Length: 309
Image (tube, rainbow, N blue to C red; front, side, top):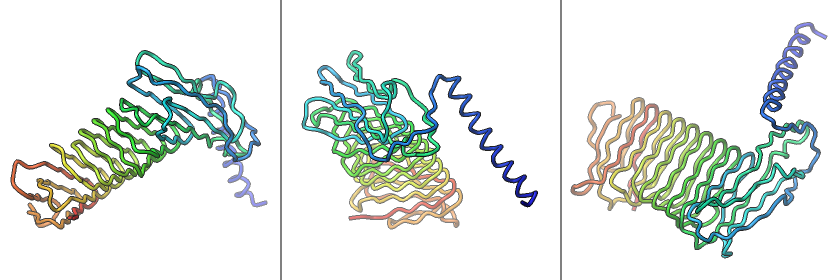
């Protein structure tokens, strides 16, 4: 065998060995267990199911890791959480449900790291959360690794969604007085969002919300923002470091928009007054004041404003 190829293979295996050793040391030091061989199939099996009444509960605090989360409403009077996985989980890998004052908490007892060389399907856990459709208080959902799907209409006081690594999606209407969404790595695609105040942000991924009603801010550090504004609160601020901003605005809506792109163009179906020849800084005014204010700023990307009926 060619000596250069042998050296290359030795180098590759040395890097793999170093990587696995680092994982082993970290997991042992943190008290986690490592499952090297798990021959479970990909079929999801019921691991745990638990229900609880929501008497005197004003906040649902749901924390998950290493799995997809599906949230739905139910006609039942109790919240119900179902955990599924391809292989059999140990008891300390299953979620626990507790009540603390007016808060109901759901979380994993221990976050178990499972290194499965032979079947990566062992990571494919799914949590199904069924919330009574008449519950209208606060919901906080955090997921460390996996997708989050909101699969029903929700009408709440406060809703907060947090995702470390995965997508957040919904095709249904979300109504809340305050709506907070934060994604570290993944795309956000939502249907109708009606909120007095909102704050949406992603570190790496696109944000798509249509339609959106209320006042607040949307920020994408690395990704595009696409939003359809049905109603505007006092102010809407859209900001992207590296990506395009696409805005759909009803033609009958009165507003003032200030747009600025450091490296890109601003294009608009509405009449726009450009402040320079580069067409990257401009203002739109529709209707009579006092105006609802929109700001759109991107460091690297275009801003497109479309008129819709």
